[in-house]
Structure formats: structure tokens, C-alpha cells
Image (cartoon, rainbow, N blue to C red; front, side):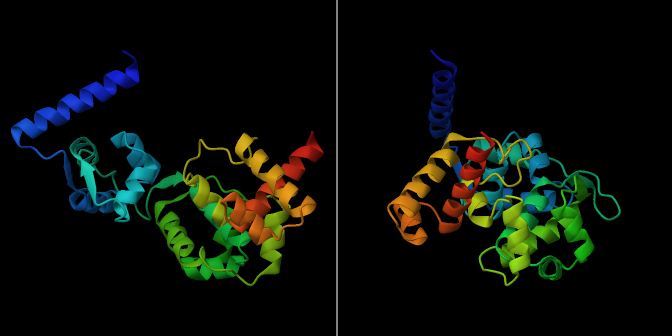
Length: 242
């Protein structure tokens, strides 16, 4: 029996035992959601994920209300996490997620001053994040996340922001929606990956050889147009560097 098969066997036995004892295997997620909101006052998603043993993506889905029922094991893991000690101004966390959010918004055409206004902070702080700041206060990260939720689904008006993002190959909003790992510092979006290469090559084939319009090419490939455009740009850069 493999490790995966053993894990499934144990989970099945646990569910069967719970049913026998009248214990529900899946619980309403609301208590865990409220607990996560309390934890977020002093902890980053990666910190909570490490402490609970759950993935940051799953935790965010619970906190956002997208997951309404969870199994008992997940519930117990989340509820066992204790809030980190608070500090004046919030504790320092890894800034990777906020850096990516600022850069993605700039790729969508939002100027730094517009991002700063939405985040209720200064343009200087946004500029530092765009430049790749490594550490930041949790409170500022929450403000950047709020601004991202406000601005990420609409185009900005700054051609300069778009040009800066394009020249530096910053990933856009649609890219992060596709990979769903914007807060994961272990994920390297600049690493060469076969999916991006294949998408870029297919996009060039459809747009530059078969003369498809970008929007139709993206629809045929099952991705957003911005994602396809960026994949093509990255693939061309990889070819030039080869």
C-alpha cells in the first residue's frame, strides 16, 4: 500500500467511525472563518498556513466565504492556531505578496499614486514595493490587499505604469488569477515552465501565423487575453536568451 493509499484508507476509516458515532464529517465553516479573521489581525496567510498545516489558498477561500463547509480535521487545525503577539504598528512579514500585487496593478495600467490612494498610504511606500521591498508591516499589507481587491478587475489609465511593467516583465492580474500563488514566496514566476512556453508558442502560432485576433486566440486557448499576451512576451524573451 502506497503512502497516498494509506492516507485515503485512514481518512475513510475516520469518516466511517464518525458516522457510527453520529459526528458530522463536514462542518459549517463560519466558526473557522471568524477565527481566521481574528488571526489575520496579527498573522500573514503563510504564517497561518505553517501553523495550521493547511494551504494558504484553502484558508483564503474559507475566510472569503467561498468555502462554506469544511471537514472536522481542517476545522480543528484552524481553531488550534493561536494569534501571534501584537506589536505597535503590526509585525513585519514577507512582502512578496504585496510586491506582486502592486506590480500586477501597474501592469493593468494603475499609476502608483492611484494605488496609494486606494490603499490609503503614500506613493513612496508603493514605489518601494514596486522596487521589490522585502519586508513590511502587516497593516500595510492589508491595505495593499484592499487596494488590489478594488482595482484589480478594472483597467487603469496610466500608459507609463503599463510600459514600466511590460519592460520589466511583471506578471499581471490575470496571470496571478490563473496560478493562484501570489502570496507564495517559494513560487518563482520567472522560472522557466513548460506551461508558459507552450501557451506562448501556441499564441504565436495563432496570432502571428494564422492571423487570429488576440481575443479570439485567447478564447480558443482557454485563457484571458492578458495572460496570453504576457506568455507570448515571456516566450519571446526566453527564445532571445537561448
